[in-house]
Image (cartoon, rainbow, N blue to C red; front, top):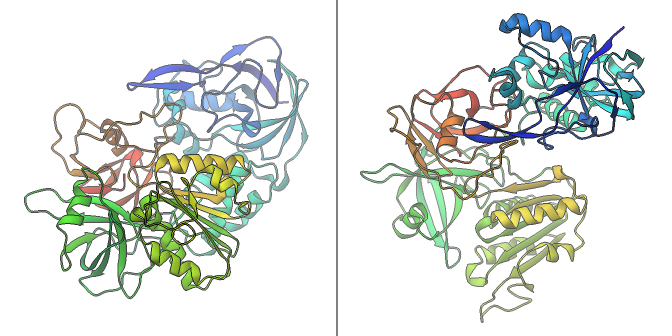
Length: 585
């Protein structure tokens, strides 16, 4: 009969790692006395990163002594101690190849239910002193698993483990783990996982995305790991586009219409997507910037709106020097901030130049003569700083189920309430709360970072499902650095030390181009050395959190990721540039 060999607990601590301070509870120590297994953890235990660990579905982590022995042979080590893998329960038996989602076990006085495989995490690599350990667990089918606590009770080392119920559909831990992280995603097995009520909701949602992608024929990349799957880019690198029209959209925004020189199709652009432009200057490196499309493609043209930024080299060049007839480079439209499909209500919220991607969504809704209920909420300083105001009003007036609230924080003397704007206020949570917006709507938000974070937090606390809220950041996105406090306010810069002699790495959103240095083992480490905001979790090519749009160039992977990135994207945690490269960072 399976039994509990060791009960291990540990509280979060801060350690130094690669010059960073990491908050982690990966170090667990055996305890001999009985401890209460509670709904969130075992007494004396904790988690350092509650976004990725902890909660009712991840209350207790289990690892097997048989896997200990496997890794000792594989790694040639004999220094393992109980708790080595960060587990709470070191067990004899309950292998990942045999234990199934939904299996229930009585251990001591507590009742547990298997809820999901282990989530990949770089901190296991720190604990094991093997950086690729998170990937190895998945690749070798030995992730271990989490359990939820159905009945609280005392547990103690030496307790026998009694199976009291079998999970539905008999999906083993190894199979479920591979179903998400490895390339093969058979629809019939995805359906069984989706139908298993014991499997954590996040995993079931990932499998729903994989099923949808498989049924639509879009199975080229892992839709279950992508934050928001998106179609493949229509072309690679830059195509030459001519400025066919340049008009003022407000006192500080200019609108550009762009046509491809080659006269070929520009393909489909989804409303809300962005392009990267390349401004070529004699004797200088090109300027690279990302701009959202401000309308749906019309007659083979693309449109963007560019705000003049104080000290902005690219926006200043566009406003003052770029003329009709000039040629610029343009990437294919990209991005996952797109108009949600369906026939339910949609709320488009923006401030300042953040209007551009949601304006493209409004344009698409008007063109489709959509019957959806549409809410248009916009904030600006005054009518002078209200780009595309007349166009927005025309689009809204043509829609049968549209609501509009325009807020000016400092209206000009020529601005008339009721005609130009509706409220003298910033667009904020107080305004949103007063509107009784539909709770089942899809919310698309774009504007300054503080504006987006405040409204997103308000919506979530108001009961809006997080999956219904999309945001789009202009400039670098917020970092995801689990367990490490992000350092805000540092401008991207050349990495310390001697300048590299390798290919040029351009970070388009950050406006930085740097020569690659062989001192770095991945594009992720290189970006971090430049203080370019990045997103990551496993750092070994498993979780795809670091997946980034690659506008041009080629990379070499080392190690190879378990599943490939989407076409036109790259996993920066395990890749190096083979030639000059441009990243959407």
